[in-house]
Amino acid sequence: MAFSLLADLEVSSILDLTPEWFQNNGIRLMLLDFDNTVVAYTVSEPSPEFLRWLKQLRAIGVDVMIVSNSRKSRRVPDFCEKWGIPYVKRAGKPSTRGIKRAMAQFDAGPEETALAGDQIFTDILSGNRAGITSILVHPILFSNPFQVVRFGIEQPFIRLARRKRSRNMERSTCNYDDHTVK
Ligand SMILES: [Mg+2]
Image (cartoon, rainbow, N blue to C red):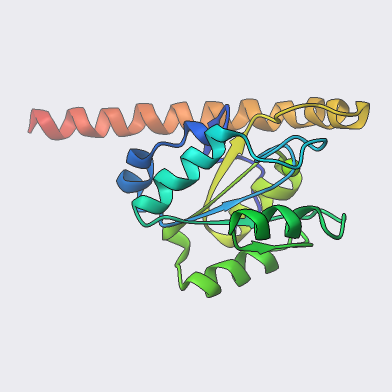
């Protein structure tokens, strides 16, 4: 599958992904990175807004699963078991191993699956390699200088992806116009 560091979509937060977005794009399996995507590194409880979002997705038949690289042995399991969220821990992103395991568990194809995460070199790369929809979210909170440096290194890829998406949008708008003229 494609080696690409460019996200298919960029949102401020996973909460910006509306039920309509899932329905319009045929996504029924939502894979989530954990740290700085669902909660900040220093937080172990979900926000009420996240729980509300989770409930909305479940109501329309979207399965949500955490696919995390976290090395802390109980952090992800404790969170997921408490809130009834299936998970893959030590997923080894950018390997596609964890993603494939998740898709097999829910019998979902790549066109029905998306992964959202805050890191280009793990989350976005693994999503693109697996051929699923890759979604970049803004990190919830920088908790150490290393994360700030990495965020700086990611910027060229974030800008390139934005340019690519706007070109694609222009192209699809042109096609649409062509079509309506005929
Ligand atoms: Mg993360």
